Amino acid sequence: MDWKVLQGFLSGVNKYSTAFGRIWLSVVFVFRVLIFVVAAERVWSDEQGHFDCNTRQPGCTNICYNHFFPISHIRLWALQLVFITCPSFMVVLHVAYREERERKYRAKHGDNTRLYNNPGQKHGGLWWTYLMSLFIKTGFEITFLYLLHYIYDSFKLPRKVQCDVSPCPNLVDCYVSRPTEKTVFSYFMVGASVLCVVLNICEIFYMIATRVVNRKQHGSIRTASRKVRPEVDCDACKSSHAE
Image 1: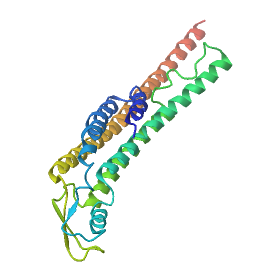
Image 2 (image 1 turned 60 degrees about the vertical axis):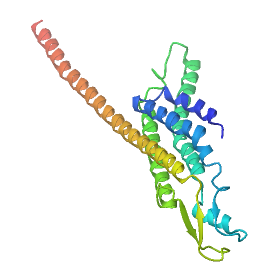
Image 3 (image 1 turned 120 degrees about the horizontal axis):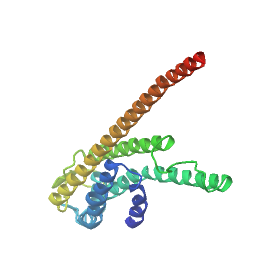
Image 4 (image 1 turned 135 degrees about the horizontal axis):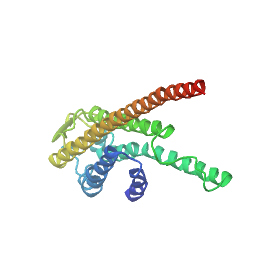
């Protein structure tokens, strides 16, 4: 998987993100993508080749490995990284759509006219798109954490597993290679995922709180302007009566 392409796409999202969104991107790149590429892939590179069982029955080792590891941790994390980063492209596509509308509007009405003050400003439909992307990312994070715990029944890798699946002749003991090292990386990746969930939730509350505050400010300004207008009209009436 070419992670440089993914990094190039997400770097465009950074300029449209809030402070929490920028922290989220930093956590994803430093504590997840970088660790995944540099260390995690190498730790799990020998997982099937060094999965030993105390039997020479043909096919038993492969069957036991597939039984206890239906999907590799490393492939599940790769899918998780792809799924949690894809919703961010919704924001980039929405901004690109706005910029295209802005270009057509200027071509039709002149270069001095503007349809948007800032196509990347999060208001209107773009605000909802950004908020929706946060909910989707949070949902994917929680779903993959649940799948990881559900498939392996724990985030800790055991040193020994017992298997009696056919064609194994009887109850067979199988041994996982480097279980302590893999357990450390598992907890690290799970911790980084939980941190991303917390950041997404904080950003959701920040977006909603900012929207509510802005609405109240605009409402107070409109109310004040409405109170000023009748006084001006009354003064005009008094002057007209005086004349």
